[in-house]
Image (cartoon, rainbow, N blue to C red):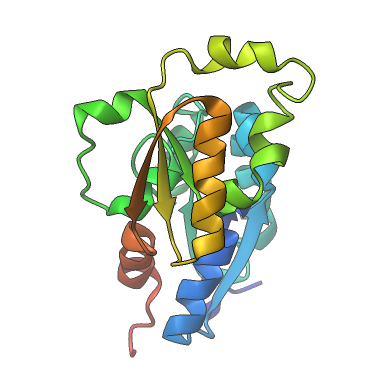
Length: 201
């Protein structure tokens, strides 16, 4: 099968699917398709590279360009190695969440002790953080898991008072200081525009 001319596929992390679709809709990119790796794989990073490989194999015959909306995300370099071997472009950096701060963002030293949440992770805090770490059953483990963190940094994609309040509550539950950084879609939007925009747009 010959790929459809100009069609772009984004293999994305389910945790940023909503934001990818928002950028796509804002730009009216009818030539861009999205398939996602389950967001819960962030808790099992050893599964990410294989999942990306399977999606690439399943769709490579139908798309001219395939992009991978993942950073390393705990894969230990295996995702980068696969993308390099397959000629795929992925997000640079340690994890896709920080990408919202900009493609060229240089993290300050204080970010080494920061625990990040995005809109998605605030909404899914119990499902992706609290319960997987067993804190619903053993809250005393909180100090062990978060002893090296000082601040919960909320990277907000939208201006929503309810989500902001939930983010503050998450910081309180983890006994961390709170910092809010409104990023919008940041580097994700510029990355998608640079790589996925139609040539004749």
